[in-house]
Amino acid sequence: MERSGKNDIILISLPSETNQTLDSNLPIHQIAGTFLLRYSTSSLSFERIMYVMKTALLISFMSIFGSNIHAWTITSPFHHSSPVFNIALHSSGATWGDPEPIEAALPKSEPAPERISTADLFDKLEHIVVQGGALRTCAFDEEVGRVAVLLKSEGRPLTATVDLWQGPDNAPQKMSVYLEKGHIRPFRCIVEAPGSSNAIAIRNTAQLEYPMVAALEVDMARNGESPSVDDDYTIVQGGSVFTQPFEPKVQSVKVSLATNLRPLNARIELLQGPNNVKEVVEVYSEQGKERPFNLILETPGVGNVVRIVNTASVEYPFTAALEPYIIDDNFKLPGISGTGMTWR
Image (cartoon, rainbow, N blue to C red):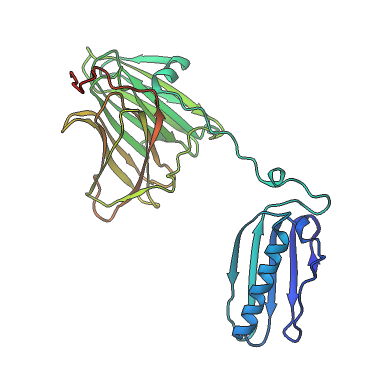
């Protein structure tokens, strides 16, 4: 038996010419990390394989009182020159020495960032007024890796474009935004800004009578909203449509789009009722893995449906993930009497 001190790895070799078993007095319950059982022989017979597996099970039973065995893997290259049969038991328990509680050895995850509505976030940020037809740009240092863009209006429709500039005549990400009522459903997206010479360009494409309000929130350490698509995602092929309805208690929805080193072209729509479009966002990203797209949709009222369209050809699919962002468990439908009658 060979151990590597604080590196929490123990190597146990079982030669083929012996039927060596493990001593139950070994302090395996004080070992954290990875138990590696290495077995070499000139021929890998079924009996030998079963023997190694039984030995690995013995290790796991001996460790159950002091270590947390959460996974074990079996690998064997089956090379005739040097056949090796490896079993790795992965655990997270105490280190060598005095046993510690399992909770102390587990990695501590950082608390998730607080989720607040777009309207509340607007109140905390410094904002500017962008008149109809005007263009406003904002540059920032290369230490800034992520920027949240917020747009709203005072009860009027909102049409705008949001571009990420990186150097002269280079826009790796572009968006066009339409809001039916910018004060009820303000716009909020998260833009990835790796590299240097980045700037956000916001243009109000409406007439002079329709100004809007814009604000930016920079993230220096990228510890805010995660831009990655989670495990519960859907592959949207080129030219196809994906829809997802949400319950009335869902006050906002997070939409995440990403690709595998390919361009991203998509249209995201928020509908409330049959073909009643409340918000439309068209997005282009030259590389959907380095610059995925994240959008926070405000969904007040009932009958909200998110529709995602892949506007690219069939060769350019992307992954889409939708999840409720803010849920109001105390939400009640307005205007409902005891007879079930609803006025709208």
